[in-house]
Image 1: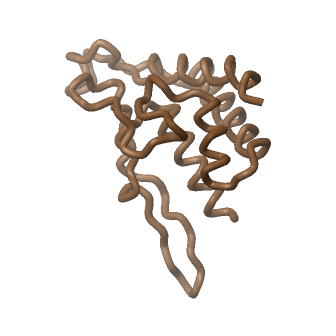
Image 2 (image 1 turned 90 degrees about the horizontal axis):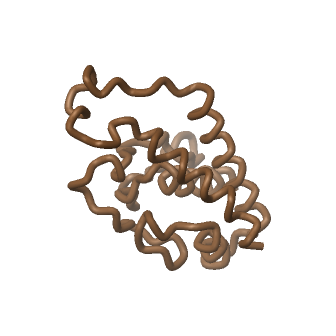
Length: 146
């Protein structure tokens, strides 16, 4: 069950961080001494910050096919599709959104676009400026998806 929860958290994290490019090949499992564990995440990118990249989800969340569409209702659909309890998924979604918002508000040092190689040409050079509104939106809408 732990790996299922870690995979669920990875899906939530990808949606919150604006990563439309999170597809199955980005999730791996390690096998050691007869046990299976989810490998650490890799190839995580805020595709919202890169205008030339697609905003269409490589794997739908419920019926949502793009980053702009993703809402708590889509995670509720995901809970049904995967037979995971909505109260548990809702709690994980709320907790990750809350933690992400807190980290950005209180602990994130903004990226200095003038000193960050390759970022200066992007209008949203600090991905936190894209991620915080996503987390806040999910938190505002979560009670409607009961």
